[in-house]
Image (cartoon, rainbow, N blue to C red):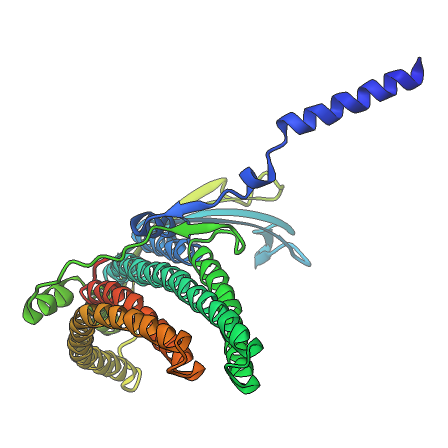
Length: 438
């Protein structure tokens, strides 16, 4: 009876796992992305972007720290002093004026009233730090979106290359069969057959390399999206293009207005203004208001004694002024003024760089757009050339080399054709990035 029960339990568990465990294919289901979906998922999941977003939280905390400096500071201290002998004075006779055991508790409130505008400048610097963190996040998003598009187009290019190399290998395989049949009946020498077989081997090697490229391109795409590197993925093809019509000056104006890099430099210029103001604050005196509440006694509960006041308080308005440091403040101000000039010149250099990037993107876009019809025509011509060469070889009016060359030209034309499409889309993506868009 016992063995039968164990056998039933085994089959029950087996059926349970068979029914409820996900199928291997389902667990590794291939996900198909559009370009927009890929960008959206990267913006939501990319670890580098999430790390950059932590900078915003840090900047917010710095601002809160700066705001706290405006508020009064509360402190307390408690102490015990043991004297070798009780304090006394001699007046006709020794009069005791203190005790050997002395306990003291003090609570203090200190409020800064004027710091030479240092607190205001520090707070404004913290606000600008938040603005800069936001712009750095936008910059990371732009770069990330471009990386997604590049990885997306690399998948498409690798897939198309694999198709082209497969077609070339299949065509050369058919050619080898024809060459072998010709050799067997003595129509061609052995070296012609060997040449055909060598070219087939090279084509098969190209297929292996192309397969690896398709896998690596998918791993790159997964990495940008923060997915498992070996996760299965497919992307929708976009072998279409809409001619881009735009004006260089319009592109440039958008770039100068939208580029986070420009805004970051402008924020840093504003920060130097506050740094100058902060440095100049050392010229002024600092004014604080302090309030102290004190309890004393000869026991730990500081409840007073015959020789101690139970409690007392005092309010103090204080001024401190370091009015001479041998030019230290002056040179600190000069340093920040020089930094501001440096940033202004950096901004001008960045404007020149942006103009060049826009020009480069526009030229790449125009070049890719012109290459599309040219490469399409080349594919048509290559297909016809291969057909004619194959027929001529079958009629034994041409050599095997002519067929192999025709196949190589066709493969190159096919690669150039789809590369032109993807170069166009990549150039368009780079133009958007140059304008501060994605």
